[in-house]
Image 1 (spheres, helix red, strand yellow):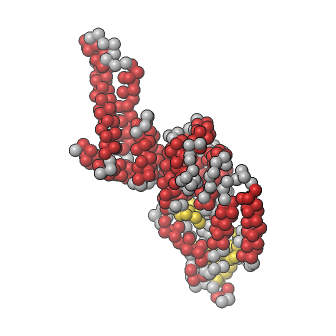
Image 2 (cartoon, rainbow, N blue to C red):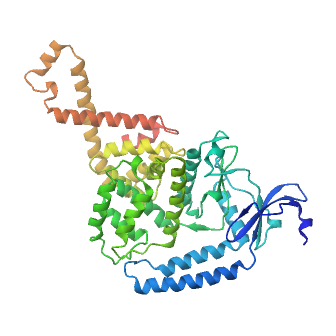
Image 3 (cartoon, helix red, strand yellow):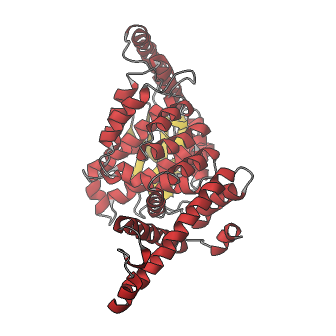
Length: 460
């Protein structure tokens, strides 16, 4: 079909070019709609086949003779080749875009272009034209009254949902594929390279972050089974000291100071010492998050992707009903320092725009009151007694401290610490526990969708 019968105009030269194809700006003849037309380069399939043939030979050599690399290099090359060949099928790319758009249909700050299927084939893809500026063009973005870091943070939150909620993610989020629209939306382009996160791995990644923050290195080592880094017949006990040596130093920084690339590089040094096999999906995850952190650092050298990510992890840990994450939450909350951990999780979780107190309470209550909740009920009863004592003693202390001095003298009656007769350190710890519980209640009661009636089954 002649091109003139499809388009009333088309740019004489590409407005964007990449290794696999070129993009032209055009106008549909029947509607006048402005579109982007992506055309595959002639002969590219044969050229790529030769490239991968040569690279695979190198991978075979590495697998056989380079002992320091324990990952199956051939498997990584084959996975990358599979992704590249998927990019050559523009019908598949259009279907990827449609699936991605459906996932984000309710997100007002995300834009995914429509596909024009009547103008699309295996080697030509026609999609909605998006007016926007690349994310690495900071001056142009700020001239529109927008902030690059706001857009990058949106991209990070979006990517976390892709990776850990939907399990379907954009594996190539470089600046050319991310645009800031004049309306302040983040537009995703180029859906040729997509990947999936296995369901078990999604919970394991969240649990892994929690175990890392909690410095539970034994649990971190066991996470590698669920992440498919290790075969279940591998003993993880020798790995624990290596994790402790690295993360004890790294975690001396606050979450806001941690750098994602530093953690990845350091963890990589640990992985090389043991029989780890990094799955292909995980390599693509690291690539995606590292690119996003690079964009953020371009705009602000002090930006930390983990600090921007942690509210999402906290929200998921508090609200996700999966057994793996329920166990991780219980483990986190019923260790020393549990109330400050719950307070920290609520503070961070509330920063996520989708956080709901109702969603946080319901899964916990379901487990607490269910047939499998006996252990949790016993722990909760013990903790409830401790909290009740703290509230009562705290009230007595408040009453004592607010009383006139002659009343205090009568109340002391020979006790070193007034009517309480406990050490100063114990009194301070009790008062802090009470104050933490009150702060947590304040966080819950001021959260969206909180209903005190949710707690009624516990009181009964």
